[in-house]
Length: 228
Image (tube, rainbow, N blue to C red):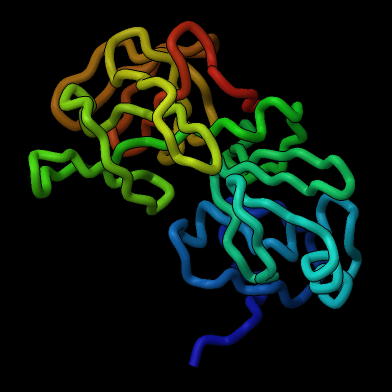
């Protein structure tokens, strides 16, 4: 049986945890995001200062309206993942989960008008009945689209909570990207060139090669949502 807690020492390296502060941490429930790219909702509430204990986190979720990607959540173990938005209505708190320059998950405070916009990468696509295109997204969601030009590796700018596609960010030369894996995780840069599964990235610091699966398009000339 899966335990409800996780030892700090075996927690993902993407989590920001103070050394020796806590021995155990709430284990996120299985969900759309992998454990590497998500944190439990109770941990988030503690990190932003709304709760100091798990009991307080439970009370907040039962008495206040906490929206993840525009939908209310009451489960303290709910996995809040990379690019997810959080809206705590009763205290006017607006946040997005991003990566810092060290490749760790960061809870970023954002403006109210940004909480209804989300980026998600197209990991795969399939054609289903009536020639509809089903897009399998980075956050585990599947949505239907009419635009047959959307390709694997492109990113979608989504309206929340409807998941309506507002625009498409193409995986192409000069696209602005975030690295979500490899030695350069957390860095931002531009696609200089690509061939098959390898991509050449140029950034302010240096140029380097990486794998396509580590590249997340976040804009054209710059990011379309706040990431730092």
